[in-house]
Length: 248
Ligand SMILES: *Cc1c(COP(=O)(O)O)cnc(C)c1O
Image 1 (cartoon, rainbow, N blue to C red):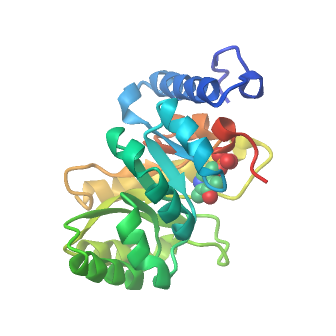
Image 2 (cartoon, helix red, strand yellow):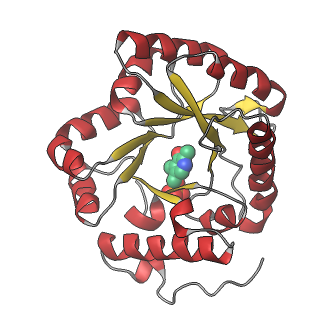
Image 3 (cartoon, rainbow, N blue to C red):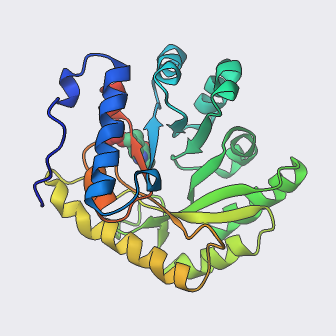
């Protein structure tokens, strides 16, 4: 791995949420510049799952505008409780966890972007619900399973084209990009091929104009590997622990 000179303070030494958020934001910008990309090219999503509303309020005050949640019900409640503040700050809510069919309506009502679309059936269902809920456009990312672990969520590479076609056939869904959640490796370098592969898949789809004008987001990278993800082209990183501290 290239030895990039990250800012000196360690995350766990940064005592407040605001300080940690500022630090991670700086590192994200730094990693983008190191990769020869614009800082604005990478969106930092603060993954607030399991943390209480009071903590999210603190995050809002620290300047967080993109929240990632993995449970529909939990996000719906938090969103409702933060309604006033969140609207002022133009907060966006990202669903980063598995979406069950029976939660689809709530998800459409709650989230600005869904990162975990994983089947043609779910696409059709979301589209129908958007129609009923009078939601003109719902940006979705297709979650791709690159690890070959069939138990995990996501679309296998071999089925990606079919799901892309299904999303594109939906009038209310906007194919915003691809997302992946690679297996966990102690050695973060081992994850790089997964990020690289997702970018290749994105580039192939982009060449076929599958993403319309957006070009295709790449949602990849978490607390322990977001810098590698950015080096490999991530446009959205999902960072929880490094901002909010450990979850119970
Ligand atoms: C929890 C979660 C994250 C954040 O993980 P951290 O290691 O806490 O940064 C990112 N992506 C997904 C899909 C998650 O479920």
